[in-house]
Length: 133
Image (cartoon, rainbow, N blue to C red; front, side, top):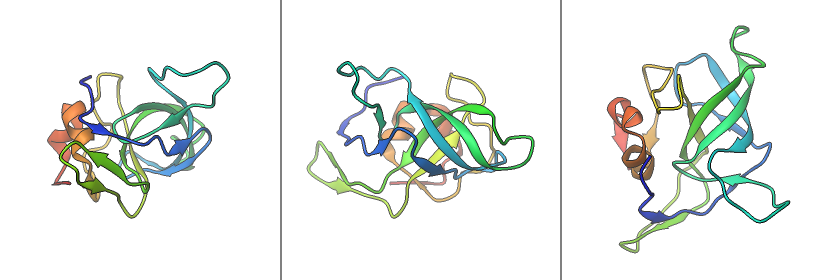
């Protein structure tokens, strides 16, 4: 997992409902925790683009529902700043469900645009991404 090359605002709070943009069988997931998130004691965790999260499946196939899965945030509505000065924001929040913690996605198709920061950090997602912004 590489470092992110942007000043990403952590906009997805604990228990946020995030739509899934792949064909893994999950439709909506609820954020439980953020992996590798260092913070002040008792501060609620938050996630941004490129973060690895633990989430539970709220809507989806009956086999996927109520399971705890790993996922990566690939889009967020709140704008963030890249080091070249551009500001990026998407029209929705989105995540990709993972098969393992190495970053390999469970689905085979990713719908919509994927943030460049997520593809640089996770090569497994970069292989399946059709549109990188």
